[in-house]
Image (tube, rainbow, N blue to C red):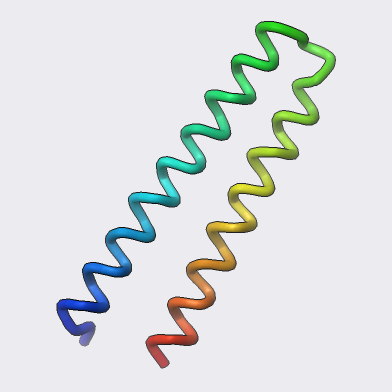
Length: 65
């Protein structure tokens, strides 16, 4: 079972992760509207956000163990 502090940290990380992904998708959409040929770059940017999120989740799992 998680302590209250661990639950708060996990909830904060999840909220930040969702905001990062949403902002990455928004940036991808704006770049696609402005210059469609750079859409692949925007997708790579979003993928980098997701990788960062996975790294944060992994560090939480390590901290929890």
